[in-house]
Length: 236
Image (tube, rainbow, N blue to C red; front, side):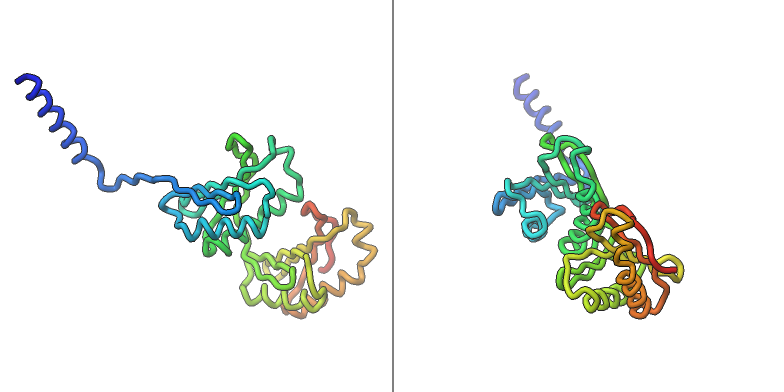
């Protein structure tokens, strides 16, 4: 009889405990999707279609030879963690660190509808080695990418149209921003010194003039090396 009473009491406690659980309790179950050795780990806040879009994006942009694990969470924006073969932050090349801002921005626009993306690079123990946030929108054609912030879509398209006339095709990454009434154009180059840049100064001055006409405003051109460091400027 005592055992029966004890069992009934315990059952009542279990019922009360389950009844007191907050209706707002959010239990997340991790899901995985693997295609071509790329595995995306995601929760119910991230859809399967988004997980597949991430795999397609990683294949196109990174094409990892040995596969990759990607961890995706939605927390206001999206946090995307990529596994890597790097063992410390110092092993990441400066050019890669600079490129990752473009990668996060492209992921934001192409996969997550323009929502904020925090992109993290992990070591093999899932420690964060390096992280960047999405910063730009972009327009692109024939391998020329115009990354922009603080200017309109129309202005970015005008800049791209002129760059297509000027160069024809890429690869070429150009950043377009605006401060007051002046446009700042940061153009990637293969040069590593100011002397190399100045050897084709006339070409860069022609670029400044053409962009000023296209954008109907003053332009300062910043020439960058492959690591994103500024070598020199042209314009007012």
